[in-house]
Image (cartoon, rainbow, N blue to C red):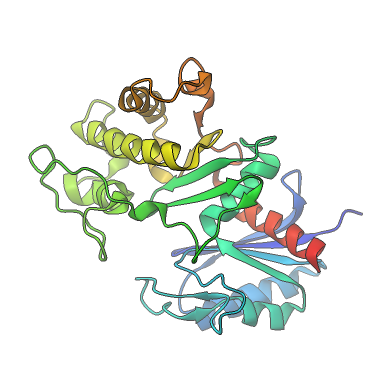
Length: 297
């Protein structure tokens, strides 16, 4: 029998839970609504206990910001999140105490990046980027085979982009920065700017011209800084798959031939891609984190 691992993708609307040894061997899954911290974590703990399936370790891939510094008194916490009721919430200790297994902890997008590296669109690569564009915008990076951490963790959704107020008078929706990348291009900003569900906007709507521009501007920044071997774009906004060829073309135009590599020329279709793990990228990434925790214990 294969060793089993637990994964929790902690999101602002739901906690996705899984017990698996990998994407081809999923034994149990659940979606638990995100309510209060106490209620949500109690439900997660009960679900793992009721499953009757022993796990070697647990991985948590969470919305943030997070404290990932192991020498910090608030390691394992969600910190300055704008989500009501969740600021300064401990995730690691309650789950570790209840389940009695090693626990790995990282951002949801770092988890998704790791999952895509182990089983998905970044297999065989050592430096790549996973970006989610949906309710919020976040990015996770693997650099030289390691998840990227520093002072805390990357906050790729909050980089500043050129904002032409004549072309786009919308001021931006980020409560911290206004017109950062997330404030200009997340799913809720599409709703707010156009007063319409983005899923109902036709492909020729001017909303998409702006969206492509902002995403491409961000990707060019990441390409120049991190030099990733591949960029994976997930999240609800990217379910509009007609955006991919437009983003690729805009990235090429913005780079203007400066970085001479086949991947950014004839190979661009294989360079900016959707996730192979689809909507399970984050929760399977949590399983990959759990595997790392088991190996380290």
